[in-house]
Image (cartoon, rainbow over all chains, first blue to last red):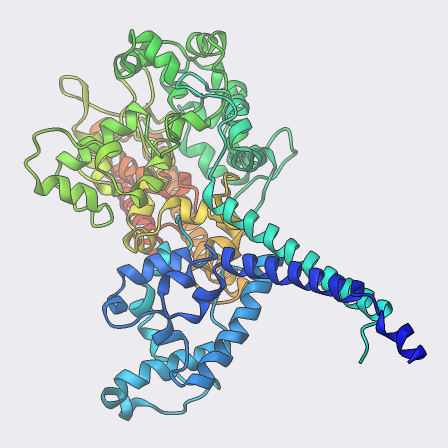
Length: 165
Length: 470
């Protein structure tokens, strides 16, 4: 018992310290998540995609282009299935956050190969019946994409895309 | 596992580090949000009379910084200048047919490569063309002239403007400097000091675009004019009220980068009532008379006596015939593209050739490499340059034939047709030669105009040769 006397009094100091610091971390983290509108990225609201302002011209032009009544950002730019959708959100979220925080990305911003595949798949998910006969040589090896010709379907004329917001 | 002090401190250190990183992220997000929110901070008030861009530069430092770079020299294959920094090369020495074409006009004395906006006033003050009397009209586009117009017109800029053609350039320029407005084109010339919105100020443009709107010419690239024409026309077309934002991004440039009359017989005039093509503007000049029965001309050619029309730099007019205008691309989209700065965007006020800025100027729309873009443009320009030289050579042959006819004793009447053909040929040749895109603004139209120039010159040559052998 004599030993336990020495043990018994581990002061509560270390625990208090850890709790205090973790509490500060959680508090500031939570505030930042809220301030940065972090939870909105789990939604399908198109306005969330323009949170960071860089996407404002894309958001504005989508509202004026032919597909805005039938498709939102996520309908064209994200896979439909749950796992694939959140993987794509995570990957794009990482690159977008990195780009917007540190800068240094190439402009004008343009779609990456993997996202281009997602986009093409989503064109087909609605229009497959109509275009099935034309689909020769799919994949990124030079196959023709729907938007190669229908470039204005999602965002209208490109002329205004770099423009004022 | 026991929570010893050692471990507690280690956990606290890591958590503290993470907290610091999150705090840094928070500050970054806040900065980005702020950049997106506040377009500018007005540190000093600016008014219609502040022509000094440095004053505006305190409120809009990023725009002002890029504006100042128009003093830097730039070169492309066909644009910019040869020669020294202080004195650009003479165009009339590089292409001797230009000099012969302008004999009888001050441009045969001095006609140099252009420099940037920053030099527009000083270059005009120093050109050797000033050895001939020049009109006050020239300041319309070379100085920040609006307060001077208001002063002369008792508050009404249009009235003041209408007097200036009869002033001498030297006197009017002296007055401009005395009033403290001796600046090249400045912020206030295109922006409202109230809210920085784009606006046009130049009376020549306001009159010209009004005449264009009131006429019949097709303007598929200017939707607001079509809209105004479809209305009741109870008031004249007003670009500042009627034009779209995209149109304004071209109109502000069209205040000066155009064809005009600028000497001392009538106020500065943009010849747009019949339309914007080379043929439309030629028809307008042909119907313009200073005295009854005396058709308009800029000068009589010193060799042949033909009544010549001098083309200025019809960039706005040629752009209007091209695919970019037709597709809703404005001057500023390529010559002043947006630059991103954090979450805010500024348009680049270093106005220059898009070929020096292909990434921002072209690649927003054209998803091909920069080298490919440059190759495409230079292909267009090289072809245009080839046609231009051929048309120039044709005109020289015509002048030779006319000189030979005169030497052989051909009469005035016998050479009348040849002179008329020279007027037509030279107008078309000069329209494309003086235009500052080497045909790029509307390649097919430029080729059409040059083909007509060469054809008229050869017709004139044949006509003169017939007069010789008669």
